[in-house]
Image 1 (cartoon, rainbow, N blue to C red):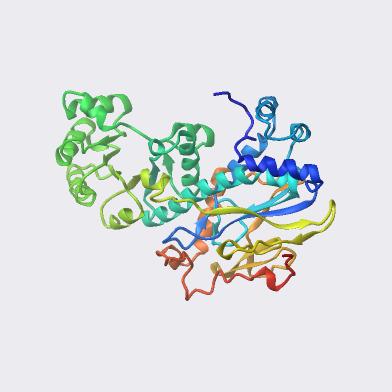
Image 2: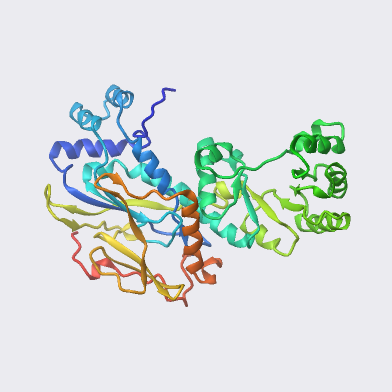
Length: 445
């Protein structure tokens, strides 16, 4: 397949046909405001975690219609020659405000707002949604798993269960939301995430016996390595691991069977031998519920893969990207617009979101018209990301992790409890009472 450095074709066909028609009739240059928000949360979740903003900004820098991209569009008559000429000089020149990456969110809050001409903003819809939906889904699942782990280490093992590039993004999103490392080397290279990994069952099965496999691994990696002890029998595996590495053995991993019982037995064996510092890591189709059920077992860390990166633990975040305001003419002031249509109806007008605090505890979440004042005692959730086409938001991944941890610490414990089918916060918690913008400003219909 032909390759291109451009990210401009990571989009839907109709983004460009809308642009083509708007350029033809003169509406393309009208100022417009789009908001990305989710209408609902996956069942059982009370909040989501915004993730992927850094990746959106990376891709936006490559969102250029280079010669191969323009040639493809021209060959297939996707847009007119005049639109091809316009696209050849495309560079986003507008404004983006968004939640800090790692920030919790609930339905109907504008997690990302694009203010630009219609032409500049509409072509970004699919790029924004594909990244925001994927990464926020992973981070939302990872945050709950991190809570269930209660401070024990978490390793992201999902690479082989998803698309090869999605695996890199998933590792980043999981790290944002509290995971400590990943098995994915590309994620380590690209984002500086710690990578971990030693051996699989195949390595043990390759050798004539388990003892030979363990000695080979220790000879290569040192006694601080982690040995996989459940290929045959866990008790004997622990004995052979101690024989190979002694009491300086770094860790053992158990990947199957009754993980809690195996961990208790192994801990007793290790302690009796004097290997009190040897860590026990478990893996094997773990998810939030299974990790919570293992909280009383002597386990030091969890490897989580399939359920985190696939539909089991990380279904879509349900983000949409909707026009909420537009000017009647080029250079004119933006006026609210809204779509009718039952559960797909929108609330017009650009909006501002803040979190109401009582000391360090969140007690309310308020959505207001953009120009409304945020009173003291509330923390604004949106920050400038791009101003006049220039990026002004560029925190390190560690800064994003720290912001996520601090933001989650504001939430009451009930926020992490399973939700009802509506995915709402607790009914007795007076938070996330959303102010309908239609009550404070006229909506054009």
